[in-house]
Image (cartoon, rainbow, N blue to C red; front, side, top):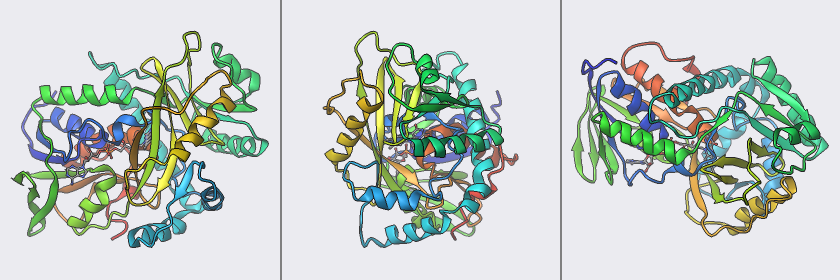
Length: 419
Ligand SMILES: Cc1cc2nc3c(=O)[nH]c(=O)nc-3n(C[C@H](O)[C@H](O)[C@H](O)COP(=O)(O)OP(=O)(O)OC[C@H]3O[C@@H](n4cnc5c(N)ncnc54)[C@H](O)[C@@H]3O)c2cc1C
């Protein structure tokens, strides 16, 4: 491991993007500090579905999503919702989203998203092979389950596209799905197993990463909110926070769903909408152990075995953050479960977690240096795959700061693309 003190870096935000950047930077010899406005113990990187998803090579802005979204908006239990609002940033985001929801955009970006996710998946394997890094990583694939002929047709088409991109997929009938899950009855028409996908227990990953970074001398400044930046020439000379001023040679901005606001303080246009989702843990009876994570496609619910329990998560409510739990949306998740797993008796949970996915309007991350400053890099906008992309974000940032080429082609993810 190198340790030649390359200079100091400040990272804004202690989510998976920030911690991953810190991990690769500190291991390459940078002196790293993290500024985090909260306690860093419950951001979006904790309560998510824990899925590593090379299968998600289609950006959120995809053909079909608009018509489907309009249909879903009329149902209060539906998994997708855009809160109608005259909020200007939502309107601007929506216009950009519509512009990108087409086949050409999907085709143009599928390989780059696939490559970044595959790289990240490999980096998760490397991390898990380090002593003490047991975050329950299981690279045993994710099942896409469907109950209707219509979704079966769409999913098989998508699986064909995935195979043509070199991803390992298997189309399974009802019996073959059941054979993969011998201890739990599944009611499905069929499914696709994406062998390339994996799962983990995100809170464990976040705790282990934080402890490792502390042991490597990374300075965490909690309850330190970044409020502004001071520019000098072509660089950012200092960062203003509620705890005073900070200076660094290099600045890495993450910030999750607040990245857009942080960007505007830097006069950078990083359009971003929070996409609220809910999750809860469920303890199944003994004897009903689940082997494979699944996406219940009609319901858009993610099901992930972790921590000897099952985490259910879902919904995408796009709109400015409001921290309210809409119980009908959670009911939508709960009611979908027995339709696919008839023996799981899940009641409305006492403890519902929610978080905000950082969603860019074109469904692509913001990753790389901005041309506007010589010392500012961005890592965010991971949307529905921000956990999956974490290590690849981190390693890309470390490569960029050290003047090496990035881990894969990230030119389409430039933070300057909406300037
Ligand atoms: C229900 C649900 C399920 C999901 N499932 C998956 C999944 O299975 N797989 C997947 O890949 N992704 C999933 N995601 C998405 C994933 O969780 C996010 O994309 C990812 O966690 C974002 O990481 P981040 O580091 O960018 O942001 P965050 O984890 O949100 O961290 C950002 C941090 O920046 C801090 N911050 C913000 N502003 C400031 C400021 N001004 N000053 C200082 N600090 C600041 C915040 O407090 C926060 O701690 C899911 C999301 C949800 C909601």
